[in-house]
Length: 81
View 1 (cartoon, rainbow, N blue to C red):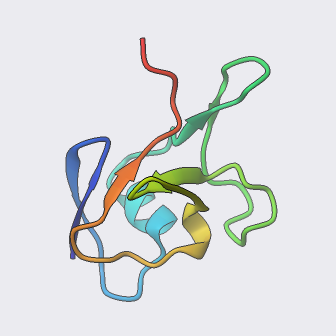
View 2: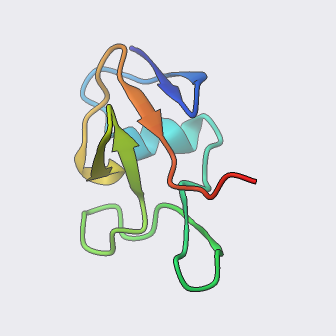
């Protein structure tokens, strides 16, 4: 299944969690910490820590609790330079 992450094409498997597909593609920095701007990504992988929050089609979700879908547009919460 093909989708985009920050406009970069990524592929995932049917039924795979989004965070796993992103990690396999080498996308580990999913958002910036609000206090110090440090890189954040997967931590607990079960929806408790919210370190892996991203936007999917404009809605903020925990990427570990979301399944890959064909054509979805995923955006990091990284601060843009």
